Amino acid sequence: MAGATALVALASSPALTAAGPSDIFQSVGDFLKSQMDKLNGAITPSKATQRNQYWNEDILKRWRPSGSQNRSPCPMLNALANYDILNYDGKNINATSVQFALENMLGLRGAMLKFLMRAPGHLAEIHAENHPDKPKNPDNIKHGIFDLKDALKHNFIEHDVSLSRERRTAADPERALNVSKKRLAKLREFAEDGMLTYNSIAKFRKHMRAEEEKDGLQPPMHFSLDNQFKAHGEAVLLLEVVGRNGKIAIDDAVYFFEHERLPPNFVPLPPSSTSDVYMIGRLVQEFSLFNTLQFLGYNSMSEKQELVQQIERELQAVPQ
Ligand code: HEM
Image 1 (tube, rainbow, N blue to C red):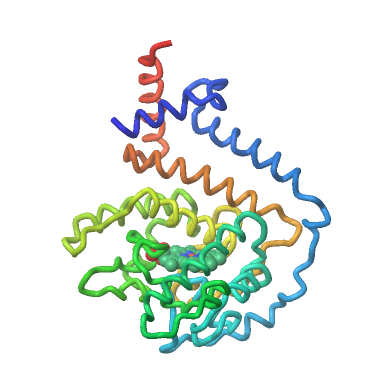
Image 2: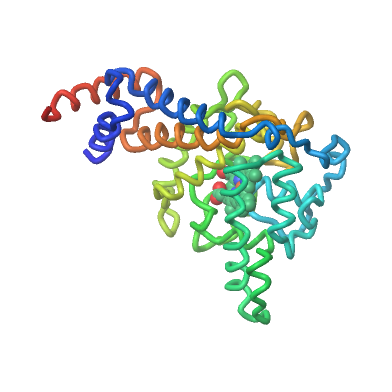
């Protein structure tokens, strides 16, 4: 079985062989934590203590509903436009304004910021594809100029099995622009003690994936590894930036998705934190767990135990 083979490869990797196979999840976590600690040490205090001069709570009062403005399938880009930090009309957004918003409004920096800032240039190319009639201006690509709706391009970032949207279909290619109250109600059912966690999102995703697989809509559901990676990145952003420390109150999450507005108690990530490194680590850590679950269909703690026993059996079968 491909998934089990991947697990054997993971379990046999030099970084993990020191620990017994039954410690596999612990080992992955510890290994990543040690890597993250090293990286954290590399962040200089001067960089780490830079202050966010821009943000204050009054900014949150600038929110307006979007009405019929140009919007994307991303709740955060839409929210930033609703605060007029990105152009309120959702048009002619440029890379500089995205970077400003992500840094100052959300407190993102470092690796995570750099990773996200790869998007505007690509979105500018998609914008040119979407507007073959417009005169070509190479500067628009250089400056990453796009409209929010360009982010709707299917399987670029937008993907099936979303948290808040019904999936795109050939009959309704703009379906993913709209928030689905039905889906949010389902998401609520997966909260644990009123909180959304990595675990609840993984379970929700597994449930929705099965639903979308049998929905009979065209084209069929497609949730490649690439899409899973993006979906997990979005979960990390939700639970570490909108929420904090791997969780968000389900009421805050639903509020954020439904209104495309930051929860009332929102504050940007603290400037002195090493959160970007933590987030990348979390992404890797959770994504590998998520992948494992996807491959093998295991979910609860007791199922994980079974998985561990399976790994032990497989490891015993590996020639020494
Ligand atoms: C340049 C920056 C960004 C771009 C281009 C972008 C784009 C997108 C796109 C196209 C989607 C739709 C994926 C889907 O089909 O579900 C999405 C989803 C999402 N984005 Fe963003 N995003 C950006 C930054 C952020 C940031 C900074 C946050 C939060 C801090 C965020 C939070 C989310 C969340 C939570 C979802 C999942 C929505 C769902 O599953 O229903 N995004 N993003």
